[in-house]
Length: 358
Image (cartoon, rainbow, N blue to C red):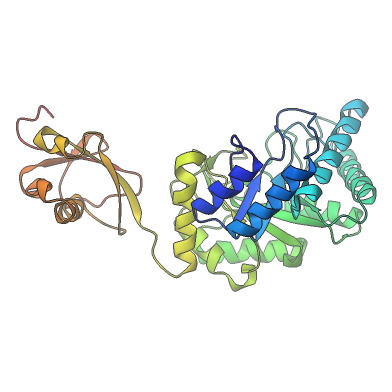
């Protein structure tokens, strides 16, 4: 959740769109230094989580941190910054701090992975007695970043001797573009089995449910709304109905947080209840119908709905739209189409009466 209105407001905003799990930054993710939360803020944050029914709250660390940096000064600064992240998270009552595994920047994995394990071991020792843990996030494998394979993550866990406060965060977009397919039943089972054999499902603490803008194995980290990317909706239906994962918090990190987080969360909720996720279609009205909704409107309709179905729905909702489906031509994404054409989630549908100038 965005924290522009403050950490407490982020919790309230998450609850308002149907979340009982929230991830946030405890400080500016593009700056090194941040003050610890004062006692009053920490108390207010914990109170907000309880009042809003937030069962799990986690943090993501700063983008600047590189716990396997080859430069000694950057490495030490990263370790100190992450130590501050853990202390802030502990004060706020957060369960985990999610972190990318860093980049070796040319020094090579054989050097970087032990260095990362050393950083994590030092951080856990420095925070002995705290409850907050570290969750290593699977990565897309861009550039020299670590964590694109389950084997790399398993090696770090082994070098750290699998402490209880060290877990794994699985990001669906990241593993997909790193080469792990989850689009079919067989592919999903194969990937989950590979994770369990290599890392162990008992180490999985958090799931980031994101679709991918780029194809399988592309190694390009670009998140997309659920069902609008290369992964597709079926994978997310499997994810939230998989009995093996029912205790794992699931988060979305999709674009356009202010408008689309609610949509993506709703899709996951409906899948978890065994329902089909609706399609969200933007409707534009022209001619005399535009007076009813001058700025257009957004409607949620069942999967495989057609333009004719949307017209009937709108006519039922508003008497001033009678005749919409009978007299109007329709356009889908600025191209004329038949009223019987099936729509897709995210389409823009226009109804254009005669002589409207459309």
